Amino acid sequence: MMKTADVDCKALLQAWRDGDLKARDHLFECLYSELTQVSAALLRAERNSSLSTTDLVNEAAIRLIQLDQIDWSDKSHFLALSARAMRRILIDHARRKKSDKRHHQRVTLVTRLEGQPDRLDFDVLEKSLIRLNAIDSEKADIVELRYFGGLTLPEIAEVTGTSESTVKRQWRVARAWLVDAIASDTR
Image 1 (cartoon, rainbow, N blue to C red):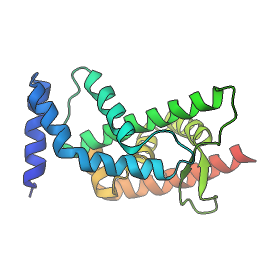
Image 2: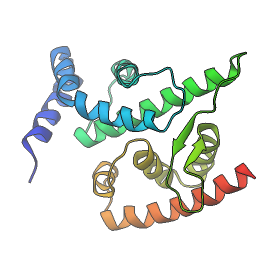
Image 3: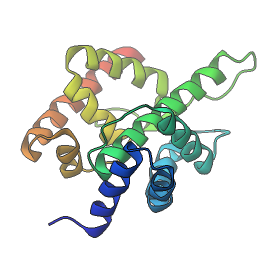
Image 4: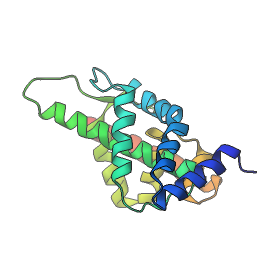
């Protein structure tokens, strides 16, 4: 059974797609706390960031607004795309800081991967995700939704339109592959 908030979000997403800017604004108001939670989780893993939670949410909102004709299916899909936008913002931010003439702390992500340090360099993770995406884009999407979106396996199943058991299997394989790829990049 669908929750009322999910139905309202679906209606707001459809209205936004049809050009209703008030629906878009109301959608962001309704989901602001959830977007802030995703943003806070991403920023918690980063050291010495000049971005605040609000900055990251606002920048993601701007990027989402600029997208044309996205076929939003539901609240989970919207949050997943928001998390992806936030990930891109953090990676762009880390690269700008790294290319700066001054030396900054490396941007890291708390991963909780077995056999790996708690913190990883965003560039190492990004390169590994790019390689995984070239091999198997579905597994890369699951990693992205799990790490950056903070989605649960049932939510990922809903977003991707696959069964929860398939998502669990793909998550285990992707996680093992990622551990190996990160270990080879950090040697």
